[in-house]
Length: 113
Length: 116
Image (cartoon, rainbow over all chains, first blue to last red; front, side, top):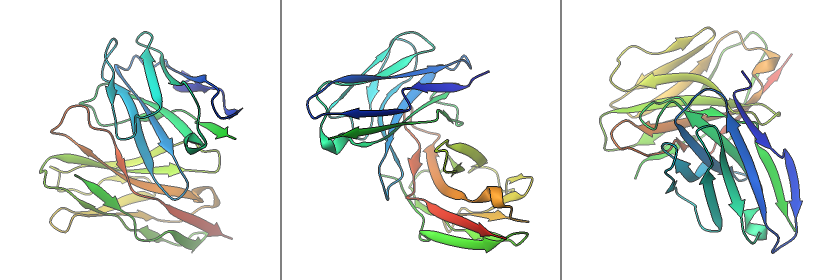
């Protein structure tokens, strides 16, 4: 099992450009999450998907959109990137939102210039 | 709202020694989970140990153990027989068991360095 995979690992964007971060899990988990990690701070939730076909906002959703493509895949889209979105992005999954373990992908380091 | 506080930005330990990382949290809930995650330089977030609030017994995973004090809202991580591979940032995290859809709430982390 690969667990949770994310692509790309690194990305540099110019202000105003758009891009989509991809996440996939092969653990048959129902719930998936997107977090961002900024220096000096813990991870903060951007969006989550409790199950296929549902998505909800987390703590810091502004400037992002998500798509739960199927049970395995959950993408995060930046429509018009801003320097404030420079961060490391983590995808995670869990059996359900009622289960406590979340398993994380390796992260994507995004720089917006 | 729940908060998690890690008051030690950095800690250091020598190989084979024991180190304790501190974590306190604030919540009005009675049922929740607590976790310690390790983040090595590779950035991968690795679950180290978890504790269910309704369990009085402290969780243990090999060289890692916790001291869970529910009344004091304290959840410290003890690493015994420290190894060079333990060097990483450690995050304490909280998750409500009562509310659907809540995420992990993380502290700001403690950077642990291990010297030989």
